[in-house]
Image (cartoon, rainbow, N blue to C red; front, side, top):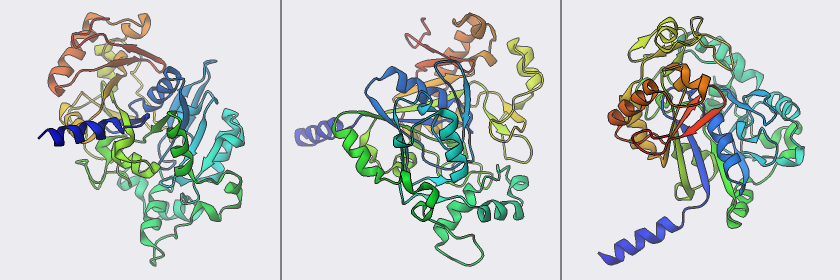
Length: 364
């Protein structure tokens, strides 16, 4: 028995400084804000990794207070002080990537794109339009799903072909063996932040809403795989939640205990009567009350080290006005902790503020 225990301890010590930020519901939980905060809190961070495609937007604010909504670059890179990795498990729209590089002002020498990543082409976007995915499953129509399918189809007829990034002249200056790059950083004990996309509930493997799901798995393990990192590398898995889960408007799939934005505005005292729009397509979001079932399953699957609850101002708008916990907000957090069986470590109010919680009883 002692040999087994010692072996387990040895494996635990092998964990590398890798943070993985994952959504615990249906996306738009505020992962970009959390990833950016992780970078700012740890000076050893040198690389931000963005797996996936352009079908979800991440929002972050620069130190100067400028708001950025990014689809290809990670929000964690907004401060421009670290390198950006677009790994092999990514789907790249060259026009969007190049536009965002200019928008943020990141030096080309800080962008590292794996040649094994795949392109999103006009053919992929056209195929999604022709198959009416935007109407049938609430897809953004970015072409990401078709690019994923094209990669897996391996030139099968009827599906737009997958094209490796290595064949794109526009991206040739950024090509790099990103696995070797990250291993080199980890050997120097430098932190890497992997910024996952969308939310656990949209996973076509582990979620409960297929076919109203996304085209890729959306768990921490999947993001590490897409990045080219091992599960044992991660010493910091962060599960990000929102007080009221959302889904895009239309026939986008089930949403437990769905309510209205007018009700959210009425109960919180906040300005949400007109609703909330998606960051990429500017479509109205549907909203529901907090559902512990999906979060409990997300916890079982992702085994987070930390849990963040964002959008607490949609419970009590006073927390956004004061940046302090209120009795109403604290009561909500205590109830959530009881329902999910885990402590909430950090709460977010508004788009920028994060408040660390001192204990399971919400002592601030």
